Image (cartoon, rainbow, N blue to C red; front, top):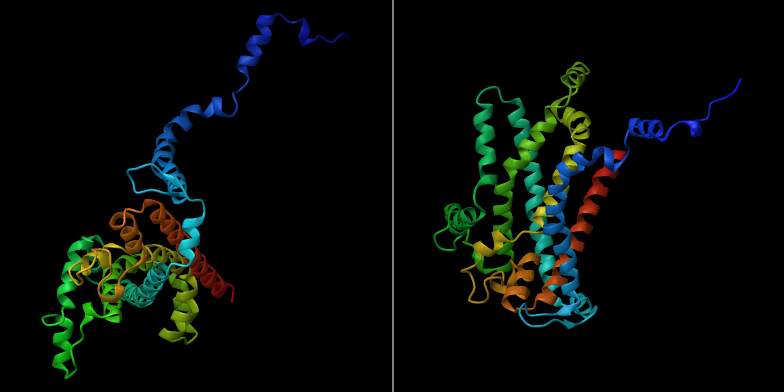
Length: 320
């Protein structure tokens, strides 16, 4: 039998056959790409381009107005030996540690209490979540009064029990404790609701089986609740690390009248000068945008390093 070749068909037939074939790749899904393109265009304009420009600026000496002067990696070399920067790193890590670990403990306890509550659950959730949506400036002003040396509530309680008052906002350690207390109060409710969402995903059959086997509340918590909550705990740890190491408004507003120096000095002895405060000091007080950009990249590396450490620690405990 003779075979009919498609080469012998008229050109119109071949054109119709090619048109009937489904389009592939971008031509087929171009309308979907067009629908999501605004996000990527905004991310490019306000995300990637500023990040790239900040690295470019960090390689120059620039006051923000005049011409840029090439500096190469000298800004980063100076950053490695800058004692003020490393002091701000140490302040930030101490404040983060003083705030994060008590905050996570209190948030977990609060979540367990909310999960076992029978009445007024929504009222409790609203009350605990309210601090996280309150203006940081307003909260810092209130905590400035609470930790005031002569008229603060904390010192009033200390005097009531026969202890000496503490100049919280005038000593480096007192400043760190005040900032950490502010951050803890602000974020306990937010993280408690995240933990509560994680608790509600744990099957109730596991607790019933544990009770039937004679397990107490403590054993149930460490053998069932904590292992099942590990992904939620990892999320809270990473987010708390990223936000805590970038703290700025808390120290800036709380200590703005505690020292006669710069607004970004961090109070007496620079005890509350965090990494971001130091970045603002170099950039806007000293008008050194090039070195400020280098400081920003140093902050980025510190945040990434601590996020990876927290992630690895939680993951390793999960494997154990």
